[in-house]
Length: 328
Image (cartoon, rainbow, N blue to C red):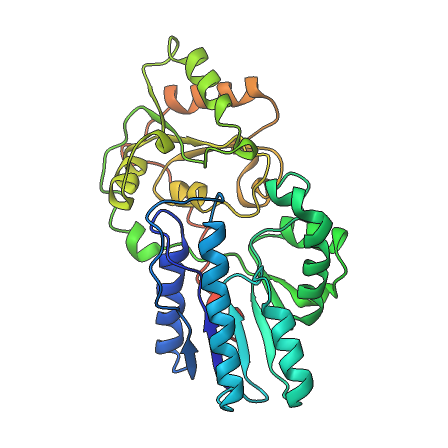
């Protein structure tokens, strides 16, 4: 059995680079027979269109991956029993291409991988694409053999909104970049800093952080920092998180939340809404239902802080997901 591995394109400010590195590391150390398809094309230095990925570049990148998969079919490098494994199954053209080639070549090649988001979630900004994306998603879920997701929240959303055999969906969580995070963990004394690190899009409600800052600055000897307003590289970002006491979310949409989990691992107190994925990941004391409750949690966390290097929840790690992802 060969694994044809299709990574997401590398974006240093996102999780995609570390995810690719960790998957390759696991496949190599586990002696898996795999082919990694990463097109040799230069990514744009700035995102021209899109939010989490550059819309134009990601389609070009994914199209070249599909072309290389087709070449491997043509040369019989890919055969029955092999697995096409994608770091993002929301990969336009991929499931249809696999099904089409399987049909005419009589090969039984499986499609597996990760699902991060889609138009099935009411509060996701790509919901506006549902008129056509629903058909693609139903096709994707029909053709895929196994689909791995980060939380029960997204799994249940898919089952409720789309046509799918529920047993195809497996909740595994996603891996944190622990090797890198450990360089910062317990290395910096905590300071009175409250962080907001979400993307500057409506579904993350960044204006609520501005309102909180305005309300609480006169009550707390504390600095409120929106990291999106700073030009930080990854090293600078993690140093700041490691020094901060609180990270807050106002998200209307979140299926997993890498930044909050990283902040939790680096000793921050987490303040998150009592909705979406958050109740399955965090303690009830970290959740709020109203803006006033969020403000009260921040005040309480800052004023009652008594741990020099932070608070650590060792339960939130996802070491075993690779075994589930690449099980035969």
